[in-house]
Amino acid sequence: MAPSTPLLTVRGSEGLYMVNGPPHFTESTVFPRESGKNCKAYTFSKDGTLFAWGNGEKINVISVTKKGLLHSFDLPKAVCLEFSPKNTVLATWQPYTTSKDDTAGIPNLQLYDVKTGTCLKSFIQKKMQNWCPSWSEDETLCARNVNNEVHFFENNNFNTIANKLHLKKINDFVLSPGPQPYKVAVYVPGSKGAPSFVRLYQYPNFDEPHAALANKSFFKADKVTMLWNKKATAVLVIASTDVDKTGASYYGEQTLHYIATNGESAVVQLPKNGPIYDVVWNSSSTEFCAVYGFMPAKATVFNLKCDPVFDFGTGPRNAAYYSPHGHILVLAGFGNLRGQMEVWDVKKYKLISKPVASDSTYFAWCPDGEHILTATCAPRLRVNNGYKIWHYTGSVLHKYDVPSNAELWQVSWQPFLDGIFPEKAITYQVVPSDVPSEEPKVATAYRPPALRNKPVTNSKLHEEEPPQNMKPQPGNEKPLSKTALKNQRKHEAKKAAKQEARIDKSPDMPPAPAQQSTPRSTISQSTSGDPETDRKIKNLKKKLRAIEQLKEQAAAGKQLEKNQLEKIQKEKALLQELEDLELGI
Image 1: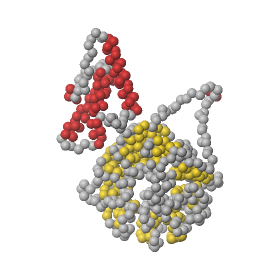
Image 2: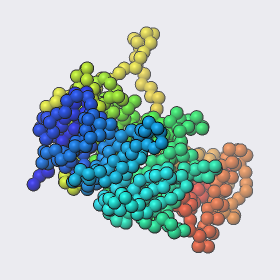
Image 3: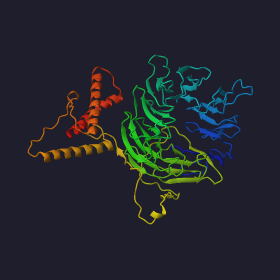
Image 4: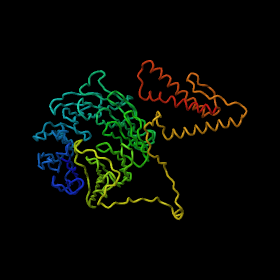
């Protein structure tokens, strides 16, 4: 039996309603339109079978498959809704308020049993940020951050705290996806000169001296974002500061860290300076994509060793989205950018299409892995509100523009569990559409009157970098970057010119024997007379001495860090660079 097409839920000043997914795009009869502007929140269950919404008076829950009302809760002020993974519990949150005598606050986080409609437990949750408890996928475990502790409940028994993870000033935590054993990543901000750190634990081993699976400490972190991969083997940590003290960026400073459950950790080296806009895992859990650097931004795919696999070059982009099956990657520039999208075949690293979704504020893949939703929503933008359904080949299959006197607030797909929609072969041929294509308006650059009758000169503010495959080629240890190749050609040309000059000056003298690559202990101390060259030689010798020390430590049995092992691998290249410099002496 073929799966039904996902529904599209639309919330705005015209009300709340559902639209059938591709290829029909008609208003659905599953959910009768709720008119008015009072709907503040809605949510689907993880499998898409249940739907809950608030209309300003009550929170209603319906079955999407049976088209019937299940429960109605008297919660007029609720603004956040969430189902547990197996549809057992509905969590609701409303703004925290205190009683008139200010002695105690009223519990504002309620957990309801979806089957019976009874309230299982009420908590006080003052902040809207991270308001919802975190469940494991089988609902065996549920966790909340309470007063710098993580409280764990088992089997949805919220009257008994089964376990606690206590660290001084825990700021945030993330439960791992997938089945047992459950893991948790916790973040503790630094204070009084001590660094911030992220630690990984396996439930329930918290109290032993070496209970942490992995630990990563770092400075320059006012807040962090922790991202588990789907197989729960590694976490990516984006550490951000609110202010960049160097003054290089208005958006503060970001660094990207990799932490694995086997204890490995590393700083992901990003070749271009600037903000980190987005980081996403592929559903395969074997690689991730980062979008980073001052505009035009770079986008690079890294493997689990944090080595670059493919560099997409530079472009106007600030977001990345993998398809549900992980076989297609969309790089996009939304927000203050023009909405350009690049759709890539991840297996072949081949560009499929380059559509433009102007003024978009929202992007989402359809669970079928073929269709894309883009929308312009208020309050981010209050003009030209509407949404479009695309095929990944670049054609617009459906378009809806909200009337000028109305607003679109939210639009989203009905979710489906993984594996419901099979992965289909990628096509490069544009899918036909009945929607007339719109050519994006190209804004021409301003030209002063004195230059308007003269030929246009092609000048670029930035030199664009083309995409390049970063995987090691057969016979090569590691691919050279664009800058390294350029420097290598410069050294070779300089070396050849010096040798030719020597031959021209002394034609009768026999050629000098080729200079051998010497060990660190016998590196010559001669000078070239050029202070810049001498400085480079001195630095290279210093690096080689450090590598010798690391080799001695490794021989003595000391376990080296990942970045130290990478230094040792660079010894051959450093010796070659030193030889090139000394040939010019």
